Length: 364
Image (tube, rainbow, N blue to C red; front, side):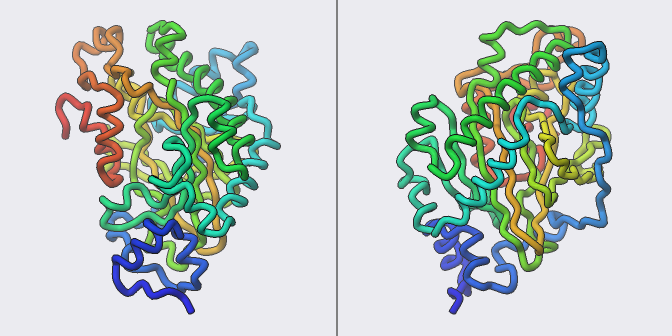
C-alpha cells in the first residue's frame, strides 16, 4: 500500500524532513506526479521546443601543440556566446567517470534511513548534505531531484565524512576537475588582457564542492522539471552527464534570457560539460556569459549527473576586473562579498538568472 500524499504537508514531511526524497515517492508505487511537483506552464520543458546543441567537443590535448591558439579561441567563443561547452582529453580518466556514475547509483539505491543520516542537522559533518529539490521551503513547485553535496576542506575530512559508497572516486574527480578549472580560468582571464597571480585565482576557485544528483524516472515528465531555470553562482562548473540526457541551456538574445532559445546538450561518452557561473560573468563585466540551464526528467529510467562546483572563497570580493572596466568605460556590476552573494542565491527559489540582479548596478 503506497503512502497517502493527499495533503501537501504529509508529502513534504515524507520527502524532505524524513529524507525519503523523490526516490521514496517513486518506490512507493505512485503512478502520477503529486500536485506539489507540477510546474507552472511556462516552466515546463517541451522537448519539441528545443534543438540539440551540435558543436563538437573541444579537444584540450591540442592546447599543448600547434593548434593552441585555435583551441583558446574556441573556448573564448563558447564563453562569450553560450557559457557552456564540452571538452574531451580533459585529464579525467574515462574509467573514473564510469566509476562515478556507478557510485552515484549505489548511494541513491541505499535504504532511505542510510541516506537520511546525511540530512541537515543529522549529518556527521556540516560539509556533507543529503537533500532534495533546491530550497524546498521556498519553492511553490518542487524539483524532481535528490542529491548528496560534499564540500571539500581536506583529504582527511573527505575520507572521514563523505559517504563510503562514493568518497574515493568523488575526491579524485574533484581534484582532477579543479586542475582543469584552474587552466580554463587562466585562459579566460588571460584573454581579457589580465594577468592574475596564483593566489588571486585560488581566491576565485578556492571553495570546491562535488554533488551527486539523482533524477528518478518520472511518470509525467512533461509536468515536472529535474532542476528549474538557473545559472550557477560560482566560477566554473565541471559536469559529468550519464548517457540519458536532459540538460538544456538557454541561448540569450540581446542579453535577455526571456527571448532565448533552449538547446539540449547531448551526452557524449567520455566528455565533460563545462559551464560558466555568475562569478565569471561579473569579473568579465558581462563579456563572458554565465549559462542559464535546466534539467528535464525522463519517464524511462533514472539518471544521474555529477557536477564539481568551483566557487570563490566566502570572504572573496567579486568585482569586474579594473582593466576590463577601463576598456568598457563603465562597470555593469558592483562589488559583492561572495558569502553575501551565496546567501542571496540560496535564499530564493530558482528563477533563471535573477541571482545576478544582486550584483547588477542597474537590475532589469
